[in-house]
Length: 171
Image (cartoon, rainbow, N blue to C red):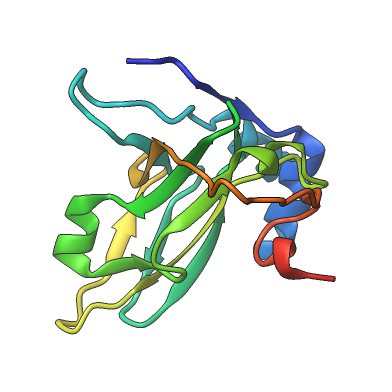
């Protein structure tokens, strides 16, 4: 296996900004407690392809409810690699917990973005059986897999990223 990436925490200032945007009214002390408890993504076994991302705080989702989770994590990776984010298999199977964008794509240049490359995961409980998803802080809820990719021989992309969702198509 090649070692091509490293997970890091975003700064407290960036995490606080994104947490307050998602969960207004939370005190700075509470945000600091959540930030201090952030776990780095990790693989469960030596044969695991996915790095589990852990909930920074507890949450529950009724059927058809969604949530945006600021993970507090960013990924520095070699050029030519991408981090794909998926829901954890068991949560998808049991609750139909799904990413709103189906698969999260974290490009290598996202790391240098204005928001420090803060990975945020937006999910929805798409349960058709009325199941409520309840996860405590520190529970694995998503998984990220690093994949190498290629480009075409005539590729001439030279734009510089600045931002997250949809930022590469903004003019």
